[in-house]
Each structure stands twice: as C-alpha cells, then as structure tokens.
Image (tube, rainbow, N blue to C red):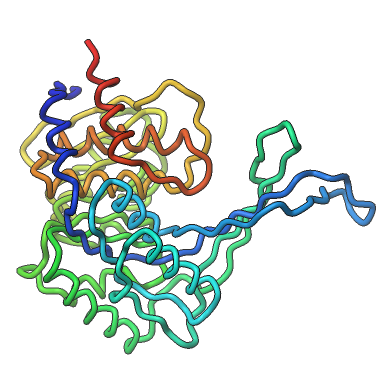
Amino acid sequence: MTPALDRARLESIVGRFAGRRVAVLGDLVADEFLHGDIARISREAPVLILEHRRTVVVPGGGGNAVANLRALGASPEPVGVVGRDEAGARLLGRFREIGVPVRGVVVARGYETPTKSRVLAGGVHTRRQQIVRIDRGAAHGELAPPLRAEIAARLARAVTRAEGLLVSDYGYGAAGPRVLRSLRASRRPTTTVDSRTRVARFRGAAACTPNQEELERAVGADSFRSDRAVEEAARDLMRRSGNRAVLVTRGARGMCLVERGKPPLRIPAFGEGEVADVTGAGDTVIAAFTLALISGASHAEAAFLANLAAGLAVMKYGTATVSRSELRAAIREACRP
C-alpha cells in the first residue's frame, strides 16, 4: 500500500517547521573531509600522492541531525559531549555559526571527540571520490557515570524547552538507553529514536527509524527475502520496544512504515538521479520525520516527507543537509499529476 498525497496538506506541514523546538540527545561526531588533487603515484609504495587543497569539518552523527533540523527551519538544542580538543571546538563553533545553542553540550576533560576523516581524491577535471576513511577519538561503549549524569541533567533542562526529543545513538554512550531512562516518561515530549546497534533497547518512543541492516540486527535475522518479511520484522521490533511506529529505510527500495493497528505502508524511493553519497542520510530522515510529527503530521505524512528529504540528501556529496525550500520543491515534483 502506498500513501495518497495531498500537496497542500504537506506544504502546510512544512510551513509549520519554522521555529519548532527540538532537543537532540546525540553522539556528536566531527566529520572531516580532506580534499586533494592526484599528483602522481608514490615511489615508496603503490599509493597515490595527493596535493592537499582544503579541509572541511562539519557536524556528524547526532550533530548532523542537529544541522538538518536547523536547515529545515527548526530551533534544535543538542545535548551530548565533546572533548577539550580541536575537533570539539570546531563542532561547537559550527553550531554557533548556524545559530544553535550549545548550553546542552558538556565539554569534558579526558574525552576525545569522535572524528571520522575522509580523504577525497580527484583530478582537475574529475569528481573527487572517497578513497579512505580514518576513525579516531572516543571508543564505542558506555560513558563514566559522572559524565553520564551530567548529560542526563542537561537533557532534563533541555526537554523543558522542547516540543520534540530526537535521540541519535551512534554507540559512543552520550545517547544510550541509560541516559534516556533517566528522564521520566511523563516528562518526555514526542520522542523519536535512531540507533545504530541497539534500537530495541529504547522503549516507548513515538517512532524509531532503523535501516534494513539495523532492523535485521535488532530482530536477529540474517537477511530479508521479501517486503512482507521486512514488515513482519518491523512489527516484531515494535512489540519488543513498545514504540508506536517503526519506519524502516531501505535505500533504493524506499521506506516501509509500520504502525499499531494499521496496514503497512510502502513508500517508493524519491528521485531518479544518480546517488552521489549516502553519508548521513539517516540523520536527514529522522530530522524531517521528527519535525513533521511535532508539526501535526500523521506518521504516514511524516514518513513521506522524510522519504523526500532522504532522496534530496543522497544527491549531495558529503554530510549534507536539506532546506525547507528544497523540500517544498520536492513535494511539488512528487505530487504532480
């Protein structure tokens, strides 16, 4: 089943994105892109020698969800941790540049900001391609109890100012289930969860947004051989987690939405152009999905808008964001008779 589209209704929802307050409990990651031109092959080893052109650092992980919320017109407030290091300073600086408050971010001694460095190589007349990624910084796992308690305290303050709570868990500990459980369910606004490895452990959210691989891991499946298998697994996850809906992102196959008491909804992927880069597309999905929900959309309408946003994001290189004007144009294109 696919949704019937009402262009005016969808545009009205997007129009209500402006100024919506969203707390983002997230693992904050620095995404670093090193651009270089191919000069020659090294004589030391069969590797390329690149002439460095520029380095760009943008918010990644939960920080990319924050950046996408801001690009869509919302007023996000990140809650998490960075280290007293150059990567952490760059992240905080970038948040300030785009008008995002950083009062919810702990700057911790002894913590190294997770950084993902991507080296992109190309020629003068060719498109640069990623040739290697180097990850460094904090290890995956739980944070020390005092640091976790400080993040929980800042979360408790942030949600008093928020209409929605977006949880972006990359496994570094700042956005783990323990931190969320510290916040009483009665105090949580509309909550959505994007977790790379433990989505089933986040309970009682309005929705979660696993990709197909994350869903397979959550329910202990090797692989799904049919759309029906995906839908059944999503219902299984919904029962385990107590969440009201599960939105499964499936790449070129689009999305599948499962809600309590409703038939599953299959949404074809948006866009016919060549996929440029899938980096951070899941962050774009949950940002658009969350904003739509707190702006009065049904789960189905929110899923459709998130699908449009994802289709736009993967057409861009690097860790990308999508604006409201781009989303409105996509609505017009998708709803053409």
